[in-house]
View: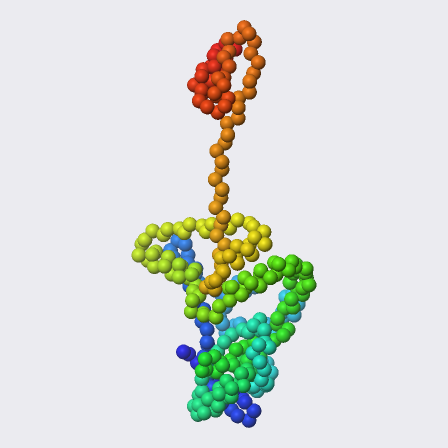
Length: 320
């Protein structure tokens, strides 16, 4: 792992030298954009539309647009003056219970390991947090930005997790079309929904979840490299639209005595259309002097006689 930050945990009067490492990584498969004709990677140039030329990084400065087309220029010395003194310290402010922090606040995770002579103090803080079951709320400055964070345990490692400030979390009141909190619900539907949740509750095991799309994309790339034909997957059958109560009943039946994971409602088989019944032929009144023949009675009852009927129709056309 590559060290992304060096400093110390400030714990009362105790300083624990630590190094910081990124705890998570994105495993998405990324594509390069190429020129369609020659497959050369596209180069993104930084152009000044006013000067109409490509500019170097040394010619770029920071600007805050306070109104359309007007900027305040901020340089490195300006930022240095306001950078907090905690740039090399994780300053623990207080301890709280993990359950008191909603997951919406969590942002980025980092592992912390002891650095230089910090082994004993690191182990002491780890053991104390393990016994109390508490996590620490802290402030830390990284890349000239002060962040709110929590210090907590992950297995036998102390980790830091940056969290959003309260004004960075949008209020729920801005979400459109939410049902009222006290909306009236049918008691039997609520009971069945609760039972369904209980049926589907299992201990969390992250090892059983995989990114199926990424796996299929990797397999597709490998097949392309080998020059194989790519077969398209058949579309998944769409479940028929059923009412809420029926969905709850079927889900409970599917999960009864089993808590292996999410339930997928299979599409109901489309009923086969019944064979169309032949309508009895209408009896038509025939003039006595007509040369037309009537359809035999067995044809009216749905029996054979198709050939006789056809002949009669032909004669009708001829004599008509």
